Image (tube, rainbow, N blue to C red; front, side):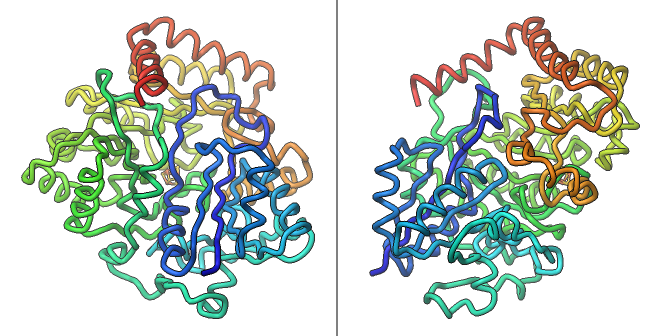
Amino acid sequence: MKKVVILEPFLNCKASNSIIKSKEPNISTFRAITLFKKRFKVEFIDLKIDEIKQTALYNKLKDADFIFINVKSYNKLFSQKIINYSLNNMRSKVFVFGQIPSYDPFLIQGDGSANTKNYKRDDYRFVSSIKGEFYNFARYFIDDPKKYCKMDIIDLKTHKDFNDMDNIPMLDLKELKSRKYYTVYPLKGVKRNKWAFMNLTQGCPYNCIFCSQTLRISQGKQISHFSSDEAIKRIKRMLSNGFNAIRFNDDNFLSNKLFIRELCLKITKQNLKFRWMAQVRADSLDDKTLALMKKAGCESLNFGVESASERILRILEKGETLSSIDKAIKLCKKYKILTVNYYMIGAPSETLSEIKKSIDFSFRTKPDVLQIAYFTAYEGSSFFEKNKKIFLSNKEQVSYHYSNNKFNFSNIKKNKLKKIYRNWYLAYYLIHPFKSLRVIFNLLALRFFY
Ligand code: SF4
């Protein structure tokens, strides 16, 4: 049996200076593992989690017939190094997939919403800079899925209705269980959580200028989701395998509220006990849905505020107003659901007084976790596309990340932005010691009990 190594590289550069990082599995890679296991002997290496020295890694790669590497914006350089090494020193065929090389990783994403129309991309910059032979996973198999290996590939393009996602293979729990994935976002109290990660929906129809169709978990604009019965089946499978907390890492868990309401009713009716958190858009929250979610075990919701300036929200094409965000935060408080709010500084043409508004808003609304990012236009986003020349002509682009401000499009100097970033965090967590303690306890629990 041929051997496949699936490699999930991690950060290669000092792109992220954040000390606090979640270690979450990449669901698309797990879908790939599941598919490949049907035909190949698979070895999965996740460099976020698996501690492995470079020589040991190369030895494992040497052994493989095929190497599949998931290339992301933050691991480009590192991936490139590994790919070059493999191409020059090994007999293995190297495939790259994921955000950077393909812009259309949908074959393994199992994303019913994706279609080639959205991804007419010429983005072979990364791949073409690699010497020698390579294969672009998605494009290769689109041409002729059976050409290279006999694997079961779901023909996603033919799937049109909501229940399409039900055909996506179940995640490989053996690989998931053998690793300690976690999220740093806290739940209430300090309990021992065994985290599972799932997404139940795909697609987002919004056009936020910084967001990349390919970076986010749910590619494509068209919304699709599991049927509620299938979602329940998959949740039960997680619970019966020892997971007791689930992070639904859909980009907008509430993209179809009727589905989530139905799901929550079923979770409650079947008395499924687990703690969970999800990521939503603020304007999708309403009283009735939140009440059902709370009853079904929802403990925390993450959503982007980005800015408390209506002008900046419009520039970001967020499609939300400050009052809808305010209302969402109040609703979460009403149902005692923890809030994780993301803010962004350094948005195009942003001024100091606009950042001040965001800071004041955060102090007034008091999220349980405050997270600040620098404005970052990911590859594939509309802002990136419009300013491609600026980005691509600058070496800094390889380490462009939301926790550094390599590119600054605001009206505020870079150094000033840095100071604001640091001081906002410091002030917020010093003034809210209980919130800081919750975050710290959660991190300690992860460190010592997980
Ligand atoms: S930031 Fe969120 S709402 Fe905006 S396009 Fe991306 S996934 Fe959709």
